[in-house]
Length: 301
Ligand SMILES: [Ca+2]
Image (cartoon, rainbow, N blue to C red; front, side, top):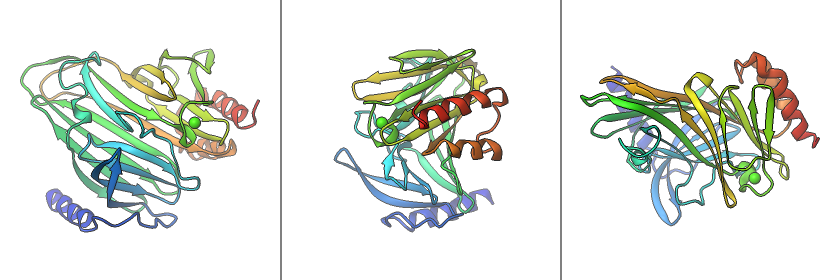
């Protein structure tokens, strides 16, 4: 039954190839196939869309997300201008080379749309000799939230040691690169701002980037138990805000994974609603500090 449903979903999806983005009415989330050109290369891409945001995924190019765009301003919050564009994930031994580190960011992924309506869920999968990667990207009606789950499973015979997942987005908050962007990286008892390249222990479950000129914020949440290290990397006018997972051994059949959320805010007041509704969940201890930091940025304090 599941196979049949997936087949139908694929037919529906690919039956609409070539269509430009669909109008996504309020309360509705859609997935549409489009032709997409990036750095002179032509790709088949999938657009996930609701009334507020759209996300463009290129299955054949590592299943990477190359656009996370606020529709009201048309600002893509991801940087597409680097040699390794958009948001991708990799796994490796301690995050370095070995196993297929980086390789999955280039491989073609098989993509299925699992759901459209109140939310749209894109499932992408690919495999190497000893690892299978599965990822799920979800947009929810009436929210800017982009939820991403990645899971790497050992499908070989040998135990893979110290597997470490990295989620690696090239970011351009407010639709342009670093220039004046402000980074807020909380640690217990303190908050770092305007930092240069930094590794920070991932204890608090959130961090953000803010563009003070256009007043757009990329607010990010994650599960501290899955993340060892937050890595802010500034490269010229481009930057990454990278998640480094906790290294863990994976026996045959075992998995390592990570779940993260991205939000786009254009006013401080939006945050209160998101916290109240549970859209930004957990972090009760952190809520007062999140409110203070976000408000101060939007009010230019
Ligand atoms: Ca910016």
